[in-house]
Amino acid sequence: MYLAVVAAFLAAVILGYFLNNPLGHSRRFILRRFLNWFPLGMTYSFLYMGRYNLNVSKNALGLLMSKEEFGLIFGLGTLVYAVSFLVNGPFVDRIGGRMGILIAGFGSAAANALLGVLTMVVLAGHLRTHLVASYTALYGLNMYFQSYGAVSIIKVKAYWFHVRERGVFGAIFGTLISIGVYFAFDWGQGIVNFTGSIPAVFFVPAAIIACWAVVDLWAVADTPEDVGLPAFDTHDASSGQMHVHLTYLDLLKKVFTSPLMLMIAAIELTSGIFRNGISQWYFVFANEIKQPGAGFFLAHWGWLLCIFGIIGGFAAGFVSDKCFQSRRGPPAAMLCGLVLILSLVMAASLRSSPVLVGASGVAIVMCSVGITSLMSGTAATDFGGRKATATCAGIVDGFAYLGSSIQSFSIGYIATQNWQWWPLFLSPFAIIGLAIAVKIWLELPPATRRYIAEVESKRAAA
Image (cartoon, rainbow, N blue to C red):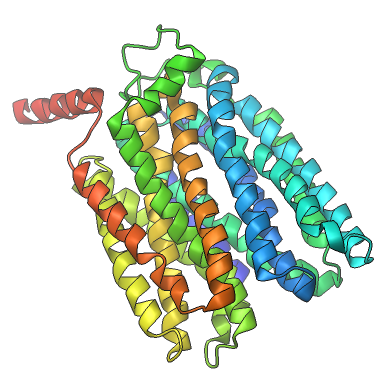
C-alpha cells in the first residue's frame, strides 16, 4: 500500500507537470522536456538511496558502529560533498549537466559497490580498529561523486524551465529528494530484512543507479537546441549575457562577491541542519529509545518523509509562483518560522509524547524540503543565470551539506550525552534562517522584473 501511495504521488506530479503550461509551450517541447527531467530525476532520487543507506547500515550494524562514529563518518562525508562544489560546480558549467549526471551515476555506483565490500569485511571481523577511517574514505568518495548530481539536474533545468515555471520545478526537485529518502530508508531497510544481508543495502542501490545512468546516456539533452527545438530565453540573470565567457574565477565571484547569493546560501545552510538533523537522527533515536504508540514513524520513516517532503516542495513552489510573483524569500521565511515552532514543540514533548515528537520531526523535514527546493533548486538558478547555474546552485547546495556536516558532528556528540538537546539545537538556526529570508523578501532578478512588467502591461492594454 505504501509503495502505491508513493507511486500515486509521483503520477500526480507528472500529471501536474503536463497540466502546468503558463507560457504556452508546444506539445513537442513539453514532451521532450519530460523525457529530459524524468530519467534525470529518477537518477537523482536513487543517488539519495545510495547516500542515506549509510543510516540504514548503522542501525543494522548495531554496536559495531557507535553514534559518535556514525556522526563522524556522515559528517566528514557531507563535508567532502560541500567542499567538492568549489570544483564541480564550475566544471559542470563547462561540461554541461548531461555529462555531470553520468559522472555522478557511474561514480556513485562504483563507490557504493566498494562500501558493500567494506561492510562484508567489517562483518567478518577483520577491520574493527580502522572502521571510521575506512568508511570515511569510501563514503567521502561516494559523496564526491554524489555532488555532481544536484548541480547537473539544476544545470539542465536552467535551460528548459522559465523563471516563472521554476517554482513548479522546485516542487519537482523537492519531490525527487523526497522519493529518494523513501528509497533510502524504507527500501533500504526492506533490502536488509528481505535478504538478511547488510552489504546488500549498498550493492542494490549501486546496480539501480548504474541502470539509470545508462538511460541518461540516451535520454538527457543539455538544451532545447541540442534536440532541434528553438532557442528558449528563460529570463534569468543570464538573459542578454549568454555570449559572455566566464572563467573559473568569474564563476566563483558570482557567489562569493554577491551578498544576495551568500544570503541564499546561508538560508540553505540552516535548511541542511533542519533536514538532516531530523531525517538522520530520528531513525537512530527511535531505534535506541523505544517510542510506545509511535512505532509507525520508525517503521515507515522514509515513506512519511517522502509524502510530506512532496507536500512541502509543492506548497513552497506554489506559494512562490502564484502568490509572490516567483519571489523565493516569503515562503522560505514562513517555513523557517514554522521550523522554529516545531523544534520547540518537539523539545517540550521529547519524553512525554512519542507521537507528537514523530509528527513534529516529519513536519520539520517537510519545511526543510520546501526551503531547499526554493533555495538550491530555484533561487540559486534565478540569480546565478544559465551560464553560472551549476556553480551557484552547487555552492548553495554545498552550504546545505556544510550545515548537515555541522549538525552531524554536533548531534553525534550531543545525543551521546543527552537526547533532550537534540531538537533544541535546531531552534537558533531556524531564527537565523527566518531573519535572512525576511531580508531577501522582495528580491527578483532584473530580467524577471522586466518580464513581469511586460506581461502586466500587455494585460492592461488588452
